[in-house]
Structure formats: C-alpha cells, structure tokens
Image (tube, rainbow, N blue to C red; front, side):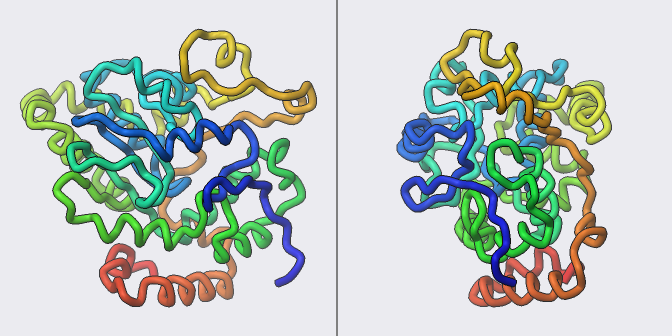
Length: 313
C-alpha cells in the first residue's frame, strides 16, 4: 500500500512523540530523569493497559480510596512523565510512582527502583491505538485517516513511541530482572484479582499482607479498578478544559494553542472497550497474516515472546 495517511508526530532524540501537548523540553527531561530509590515506574507501549495499571497501583497505595479523575491521575498522582515533565514527580511523597511509554533504552533506570511492565498482544494494541489516535484528529492531521492507513503505520513502526515489537523486545529481555514485574494485559483481564494481589506484593511486603488480610479492602480495589467502574464513573480526560489549566501544580498540562483546537477537540476516552480479541472486528485476514509475519520476523531470536499469546496466533 502506498500513499497512506500518517498521524503527525515529532522526532525527539530518535523517538517519535505525538505532535500536540508533548513539549520537547519535557520529553527530554523525562529521558534524562534520575529516579530515586523506591520509585515505582509503570511502563507500557501505548494502549496496553497503562491507565488501568496506574489506577491499580494508586488504589493499593491509597487503601482503596475513591479514585481521582484521569487528569488528576496523570498530573498529580501518578504523572505521565513525557507529558507533564519531571517537576510533576518532585512533590509526590514516597513511594513515588509515575508512568512512561518509553522503550527500555529511554526509560529512567535504577536497580533500586521498581518497574511494572505491562504488554498486550499486537493485534488488539494496533486496533486500540488507532481509535485512541482518532480522538486527537484536531492535533495530528489524521481526521481522514482510516484503520488501513493506521495499520500501515503501525506495522512499519511509524507511530508515536516507535515500533511496537522493538519496544516489546526491549522490556522482554528484562522480564526476569528482580526489580521488574512483567505482566500481560490478557492475564490481568482474565484474573483481575490475582493481578491486583501480585502488584500489591511487588510494591512491598506491607501492601501484600494488608490486601490478603483485609477482604473488604481488596473488594474495594477490585471494584474501583473494574472496567465498568472506570468506564462509567471516571470522567473522560479533556486536556483542553479550564479545570486542567487553571489548577495549580508544577506539572500541569500545556494550554491549547488556538480556539480552533478547542472547537475541534474530542474528549479522550481511555476506557473504550477493554476487550480481548477486538481486533477481529476491524482487522482483515490479510492484515492479521501480515502482522503475524512481522511478529515472527522481529522476535525470531526471542521465542519466549510467542508463548505470551500462543493461543492467538
């Protein structure tokens, strides 16, 4: 396929980053950030369960409290480092947590920090990433872009945060590191309770013990991090809202650059379907075959990756 439409991105130190909202100085500061011992870093490729994992971590650290709105989560609670910049992390009391979409080589790393890495099968990731990108049509010149267009970008690695498989491999090779918890989105969906308990133990012995001895606490966390709760009770994220830009805080989001941005803005829903296998409703058999072939080519020296989703190949 030739002449396909591409979402607009900017290249920062070899990494494609979304054009809008992501400021070059903040992205570079995130790349150079020096984490402190005990920091918790959530890492995913886009649309692989990042926001969901943020809420699980937040709920565990805050003993099942009523979860914050999405912009509060990204800005003040568990900041999105590439977006908010590093200042947003400085005011957080320990244990500090933040998230990145970086591949391993770009991620602020320390053996004294904890990394929760969540990966998702490439077929569902591609579809979910397409719908997420379409919500930014005012910013990335992709209003007329189709799924076929996006698929061509995805399979070539011409999307924000670069090639899916390169990102996956970069973290898969660290999955057995003692300070890395490596999870799949599919296992988290299929056994929500076990995933929450596993994350709690990884965060610290005290969190693991508390969640196992307090069934009411565990049930609250499971409820607050269920897809239905987050879909229906946590408002969609609007980075152009006055509330986001007028509230104080060192990491607040960049303001809209024009009235046209506001007029064309579509609110960003981070909880669209949360479904395993949604790719079947959008991807042709030829596209599935091409993506399967691409996967086999990229991971041929990492056969363990295939076992993550062997039932879906």
